[in-house]
Length: 256
Image 1 (cartoon, rainbow, N blue to C red):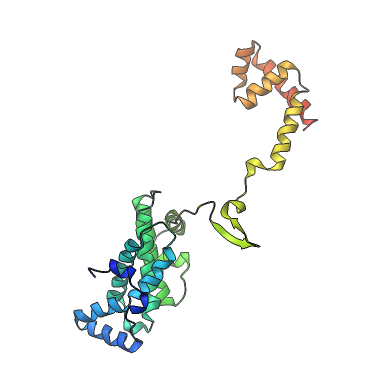
Image 2 (spheres, rainbow, N blue to C red; image 1 turned 120 degrees about the vertical axis):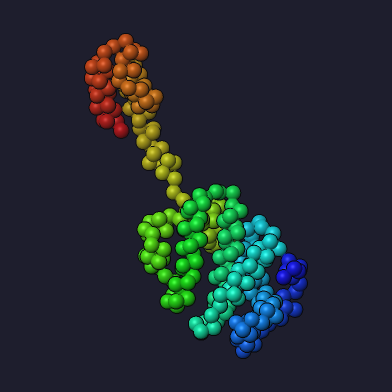
């Protein structure tokens, strides 16, 4: 494995391909303690790692680094693969390789997640892979939470916390050559036409108030001052401020 990084520059067609029968023989030999069989299994499945690494090619990470991390996932898959499960090795290994690369990307992410959440998330991912092999389907959150003996909400929160951030300019759909980005599907409640029209209506309604009423409304609802603070600043009682405020609001409702 000392030259595993150099393999990234080698034509993948030159890498060896093991037949299913040969793979089974090597795994049986490995279980009997044949270390050379382990080395052959690693070398014979490097194509698998390279194919997975291609999925992460646009993350801005060095492919050599991702390949090394992927090889760690491959080794773990080889060491833990059980022939008795009657599952193809690639079916078992790919999720482990992907998981190892994702773990590396999360640990090196600029967005920091607490250690406790990361630990729960990693355990949940391991349990998910284990249950998927056991049930031959994707397990539910409830099943993962039950296996971890944790509340479902805590498992969901942990898994969401380690999700990779997505750029607002990430294309999600192409139609007629024009890509639709994430930001095109995000609503902005603060900049809608209704809000804009309401702002104009409020501004016009305030113009119909007296100078004192306009001053009170501005201080109360735009500057966030209390009735007592308004009373002290303009030199009247709080009761007068309250009365003028109510009258001004009733007058404005006619125009908004």
